[in-house]
Image 1 (tube, rainbow, N blue to C red):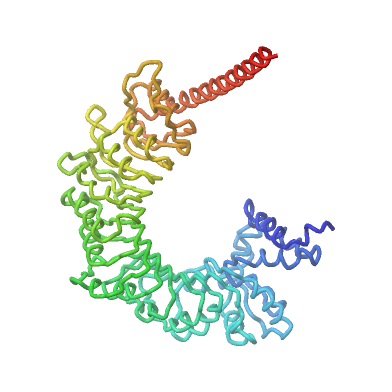
Image 2: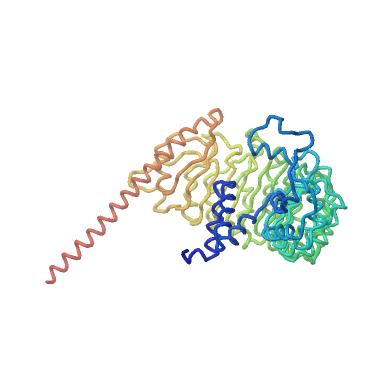
Length: 555
């Protein structure tokens, strides 16, 4: 065998690609490779057992101590066909206690598991593939059970049907190398299990995620979990939190990324967070799910966030803000609280199922976004709240001058904009971005397809090109002159491949015309590239011919 097959890094890379196309076939292939030779065995087994969805594969390692039986009330005569459907009707149970050799075989493979995804504990209403007798045997009779999953890195744990008496069962998964735990609960289930001490014993744990399916307000023992000695860096919680929990979060010295939901009924008392001398000292990224813009503004105003660089706001209110100037107030508060030289990303979105009708009195004007222009290092700015907007090309010129490091710009293409003849934001407004923002790669907004008339000798971009822009989102903007717009885009965006627009003919009758713009632009781009190649060849040929002429004259 070639010596390259003895390099474990190469084998690991190749074996990981086997499951990309078909998981079932990939697992069968890995099992066959593990039995091929000793050089493949350890690497193939490591990839095969690296990620598991439950305890069924490990339970089958116990040999004939585990057997299958039909679920109560089911039998082979139920009429379901296919091996997979037949397996869904069966359940594994423990007919006797495993022997020492069977325990060792299961231990060998358990130590290879690094991730448990969608791990299921049997509870009413779930298709039980494994009986509780196996769980009891594994976690109460298995020798050396404390190190059963010694290499486990990530655990998704549903807190369903688990009581205080089952704490030993849960904590068997908390090994010394555990890095991420995702708790999933039901609406009537409180996370009141005293398992926090076991989490604190995991020295590498950096990510904790709390998710409740119906997202009620529940009592979370976050104060027990979030202690100053806990080196937590990432915290995600879909269960609404009150001010006490937020204050506990603020005391963590190493917290860097937070994604939380604020409760609608919770009130943040004045100076609650400001009283903390070192609140959120290391926080860099914050995703905040709040009721409205007013609540988000107040939270930011009360929270000292000296190192924050990324802020994402998700608004639950499905109506317009009471006043469009609220976005201006939010920007002014952010400019006071955050560093204007290091802040990079801002995003605001809403859960509105459909855009609201145009209302000029509630439209966001360019001056309302002026406070955000103070952030010199802004690389991503996204408005996706489906509000009303009345922006123009002059605003794009100011944006390009203020944000020279801009990578991504989204000006709510799904929001409400003025009609085609009234809207002042056009494709021409993209020129300042191309000329002053060399890193721009993502552009979205309601850009009307209007370009100024130019002579045949003028280039729209004056030689400037955005090489990284491959697609543009224009929402339901109109395009009266497809050829002129295609000629403009082909010169400014030489890599353009697609234009996103609304496909609904009732709301956007110009969707088909934007498709013609893309087709024409691609053709124009090919012609431009061909002409450029010919020009370069002619220039190279003339220089060579000139040098030969000079040499003959000297001789």
